[in-house]
Length: 376
Ligand SMILES: C[S@@+](CC[C@H](N)C(=O)[O-])C[C@H]1O[C@@H](n2cnc3c(N)ncnc32)[C@H](O)[C@@H]1O
Image 1 (cartoon, helix red, strand yellow):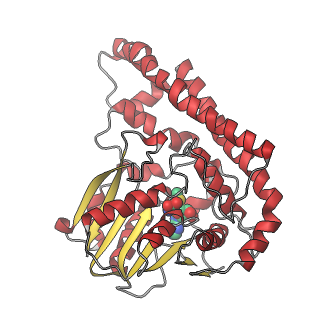
Image 2 (tube, rainbow, N blue to C red):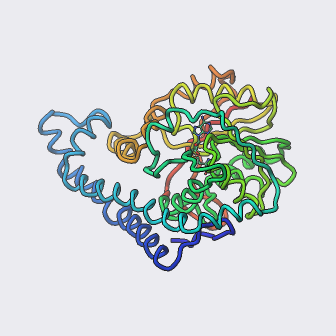
Image 3 (spheres, rainbow, N blue to C red):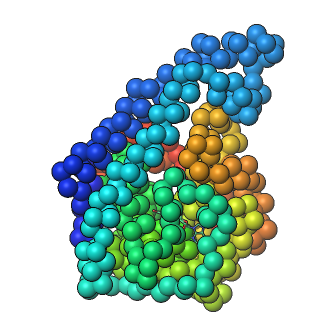
């Protein structure tokens, strides 16, 4: 694993904690590189021939593949170990956060830096977040244990690094790097006065953007207070300049035409179908004329083979990513046009999951993210 860059707000693991965390990471790399590939011979050598023999045809979609693959002993073995490794991530990280929490709270209070934090205890965390702990992180993004709590953010910072096997880069900001690079490729000369990032969590992505666009005013919203508190403190220590606020992306308090650019980085797949429609409408309302909306997210089901589609959905059935199923099926052109974007001003791009500074996410070789781009 590329070592994660530590910063002043990071919950630094001690010797034993580091050893556990590195074990979990290496276990996940082993599963991904040595065990998971065995699902292909299991499917093509055993499961598919048995299906064809029984039905006289191949499975027509990923749902039919699921019915047979989930009974295969090799797939069951990989899947059970993968699920266990996911639980082990949080077990290995929570200890070091809890041990250092009083220090982290104090540091966050004393920090000097740029940007701001505005919390609103009246914001209701949507049901699509409270229904289950997404990614199995205990308490998810929003569980708040007190007025200054930031534990969920500190756990997320280290936990997602191990979750992605270092794939988000040493600064854990790879998604921001990918989208910012794509944005500047598409709009090299665009002057951007104000940018809003929706569903920012600990602001890894938007904070990176803010370091690349020094004259721009960055705002970032999320519903989870502990992640926002940590994100604000983290942005200060890594030299970012972001105004964080606790708001629901479906309906924010910003006036119409407030922003030149509205972004999100893997927000949509963790919301509901009506929420995705509402978020696009809100983006349209918030953009200035000529402004650009860019949402980077996980792949949809269209165009995937039945096996590929089934494998992509492991997270839905085993990692509390239940709502990703909504995005997999949606007609995004319909979502965009219902929000107000003209059909010719909306396009789905496929963007490579790599960036230019020599870092290539291990877990995402040959992988592309769809990016939904609308211009008002
Ligand atoms: C996968 S995380 C996003 C990661 C983050 N954008 C990054 O680049 O590191 C999804 C985030 O979206 C937030 N979220 C989900 N629904 C939301 C909504 N309706 N309004 C604002 N934030 C939301 C969650 O609280 C969570 O922090």
